[in-house]
Image (cartoon, rainbow, N blue to C red):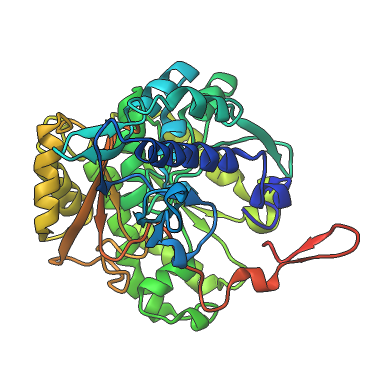
Amino acid sequence: GGGYAQALPMEDLNLHFTGDFHAIGAANNLLAALLDNHIQQGNSLQIDTRNIVWKRCLDMNDRQLRHIVDGLGKKTDGVPREDGFDITVASEVMAVLCLSNSIDELKQRLKRMIVAYTFDNQPITAGDLKAEGAMAVLLKDAIQPNLIQTIEGTPVFVHGGPFANIAHGCNSILATKMAMSYHDYTITEAGFGSDLGAEKFFDIKCRNNDLNPDAVVLVATIRALKKHGGIANVDLNKENLKALEAGLPNLFRHIEVLTKVFKQNVIVAINKFPTDTAAEISLVEKACLDKQIRFSLSEVWGKGGQGGLDLAEQVVELCNEKSNLEFAYDLNDSLKTKMENICKNVYHAEKVTFTKIVEKKIKQAEDLGFSNLPICMAKTQYSFSDNPNLLGAPDNFEITVRDIRISAGAGFIVALTGDIMTMPGLPKKPAAENIDIDENGVIQGLM
């Protein structure tokens, strides 16, 4: 958050917080170390070093670590092989932690995670390496939800952080259930838009835990809609009604996905920025009125809770309406059919192409008994397509699934599209250049 709508303590939250991410990274890398140690100590499981799928992870954007060779040096330094790092939020351990309801379930999910394949192409799991117990010990505190508060004292559970463009994009099921048990109304965030966070929230998290949301708040900004109308980032703070109108189909597409695919009751929260003009806000409000879409101008950034009273009241009204969640696909569908249903019904793609390696991996996954798992699409958050430059509400485009990963512990198949990376790189001007701390311990530049 920001302004008068943020959780505290902000600095801790944006840095190490309670150390959950470090614990997840440690558990992930313990498994990697046990895997390489097993190979070094004789490889009785007959692991094919050319077919290892488990990567080390680091909570840092570092493109240099995407593809590496390790184990170099003397014979006692390990077995040389190609390797790589993912960012911690893309680790399957993160997804497992967020989808586990207990320590026992956590251990069972960790045990099922596939780390490599044998010379005859049989899966090797964390359980085969007897890793789940020690990993669970490292995660014993991290599995407990973290309770903090907003500036105004509203309780906030912050727990987990799988990104919605490369993972399933939801906080932990434990935090959600804990919040629901303590309060009449629980609001949870699903990262990015209806095509990513919401789709995975419904098709993975809600399906696995029999959750049926009462309402959906779709957050929209004038700036984002102008971006989808073709305006460059440097000009987003300037009034441009033509670009704003051109970007509105993107908003309507998200509403269509939520109402027609998932059958949800939706309200649009127009998240007001200081640079938004009265004419721009009026244009969006009129467009919603014309299409009989519920909306509310949210001014929580500048006014705190007072700026969200109308939104809150409308959400309460919406929660009293009947809501019956439907999913984008049936779990009994084939893996390819499930991916095609997401791409065509949610994204509006005309065609879905599978590379030869994906065709081979899909057959392998189905032969291993994973055909009934849900799909976790890894896709750019900037577009309904797999092309980040194809903005607005595109139709008749083609999506290419270039790779898949079996996340047997998390309980889904990850399908990678476009140029999406599970280890991002830093931008030309990293935010770190503007972050500093003074002699009194006051941090600057985090927000």
